[in-house]
Length: 402
Ligand code: HEM
Image (tube, rainbow, N blue to C red; front, side):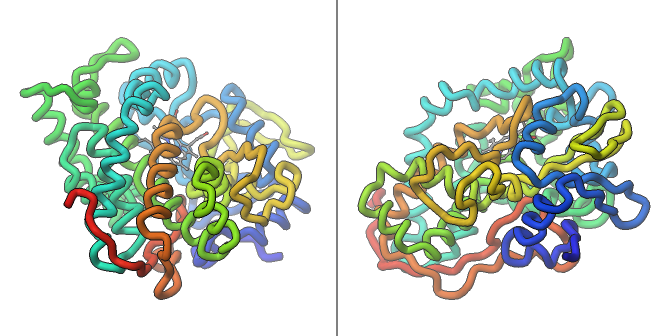
């Protein structure tokens, strides 16, 4: 089998599950070259190996960054992207950023997410058609992040387009990636300045006036934290709305179960997360010479764990290629594993449960009008995968607000 996990064509309609399965069975610690001068990496595709990698931060570090390309590192010795650090620094940083994303805060925020879901559907319900990705998934993620942070919803819609460009640019130091980073930086600087001058009762004010690792937050650190939060919660959640709905279209029996018994929606959302696995991989770097199975790994070598592969590993999931809204247990790793386990997992789950509940209730006859498009612009292998447009129609209904 030809293996190239960085070939954009392999992600044109989803993830390269045929390659993943071959690697799991034949070469679970696969050496993968990268183009140009960029050093290659080992690709891990088995569930247990991914967990061992992400669970051992002493041997497998998140520094200098968690993407395959070193050029994407960010900040300096003092200013760091949390996702690109290890404990103990990471622990303190995570505690600081995690206040609004804790289970308790997210529970308290549920009524607001309900309102966002109502508003998003109200904007399209009278039209009888929409693009489920941009008009529903994208707006859900943007509006929730906006309301949570205390920023205008239109701004987050704009930032989410930038964040998608950032997530899917090969380099952040040139071309489209750099341009998107510059625009994002200009927004974060303006927000920093405004909350410094005029504090409010919101999450960005807490971030701007915060302190951790013995340092007050400055404009540069705020910018890095801001990009992390905006990027992390945008196209990930959006893609599970689109990819999850596509799974329901393709499995009408599973959809019928949810329509008949909405109490299955939370378990269906976990199955959608397993099924879509929107983050393709995360990388770690060996801090010492070590072994994975019988493969020698030299200090400084990159290793990437593929979530979509792990989530369909037959060693971990019976009938992994079956979409089952009642799957139990379902210990998927779509949110990662170990110290960097997704900080927004409670919020993301809540958003998805509320949105699918409302979609099934208010648009029960939703159906595609043409096939969803998954492919990115030519030349780009995605780090976040999912449908990019999904035209749908439904019987128009009344706005709740009306
Ligand atoms: C379906 C939606 C989402 C998925 C699938 C997802 C997935 C992930 C994954 C795989 C990681 C890396 C985990 C690791 O390395 O072990 C991560 C990290 C992170 N996610 Fe999410 N995420 C989602 C939504 C969100 C949301 C809504 C937010 C916040 C608003 C968020 C904030 C973060 C942050 C801050 C990190 C870094 C955590 C750390 O370094 O400690 N995510 N996410």
